[in-house]
Length: 82
Image 1 (cartoon, rainbow, N blue to C red):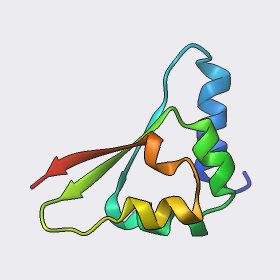
Image 2: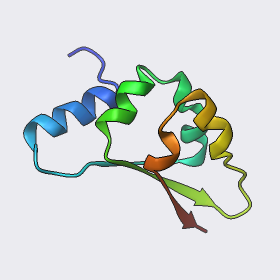
Image 3: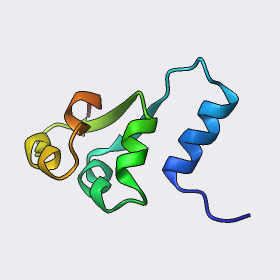
Image 4: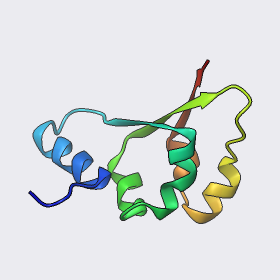
């Protein structure tokens, strides 16, 4: 099988479960690296939301990320984690 990227996985899940809302769970470090992912704009469009495990004391700057990847702020939900 060819490699499957996050965007591929989300699209496969949308095909199998067309009525489902799909939220992708990731850590804050992955969110910061999102602009470097394979087709990040398509990934963002395919997700209904991105739940980010936000550790206390971490410094996730959504405004900086929004400038690089427009639309990311409205789809990102920070989940506090210990």
